[in-house]
Length: 335
Image (cartoon, rainbow, N blue to C red; front, side):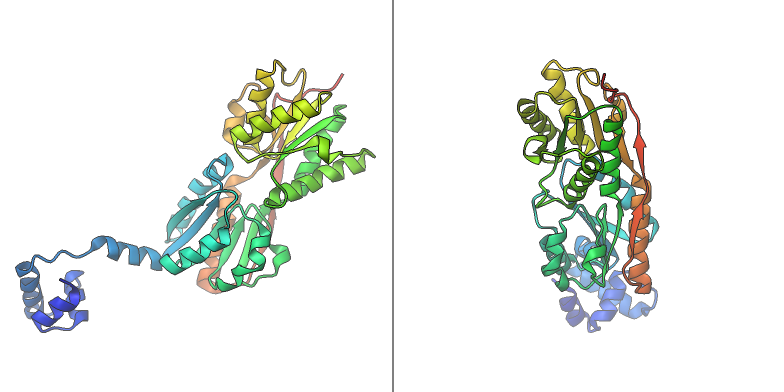
């Protein structure tokens, strides 16, 4: 039994039947009684779930999250959802692996749910140079800059990863560290890793030092186990290391455990600096020194830009937000 069947049996149009089923007042009592009589006789039950999905799709914003264990992203998701709701929209969240194609996921979401806009949390810019042109709705990259892509419906809100990474490494150098290991993502898949590695290179070059990437740079997934395993490999390859810069706090926390399991003390034997400023780092022992991104501001500006694009048709905007070097207890002067 469908709405069309009810319309045929009651003698009223599909639109009238729909208004009766949805409780609209602009229906005559005679029509309401006849339609409801058919509904009762055939025990028709409206598909509320389908109706809900339709409403959700028409007023929904999709959030595609790249990586399932990134704690900064977990914080951002909660803040973004709250901001989207305050803006009068529903938020549809999709999690994909950090190696998956977020543009293909967005195309699938557009086909199935027809969102009004999309937020990308974590992204590989190279993927936006091909298939993204098929997406016509407003979109925003969060934590990654799309300024160089020149796409008319793609804005971005991010931190200056290069400058922040450079400062973090220069802080270690100011304390006398020269043999510095680097933990980071695969640069061919992670733009954050690319930009942060460029900051490391700049720090070394500014001090007239050579960065031996084959020995000093170890790739890892942005997870606790990834940081742990990468730290172990780096220790085996760089035994004279006195400090390590990890491109995410979760990698740094994994590294802290690996160092402990090797019998090394932080910061007495090896100093550790992370990146992101997640809350868990401030409860680690020792408390993690890190570069803190402004998660609240990232969430607010990303959603606000998307909403303005949806409502006003504004062109793309690309914002860089300030970061903070947060001194903890995991860094010590090299003596």
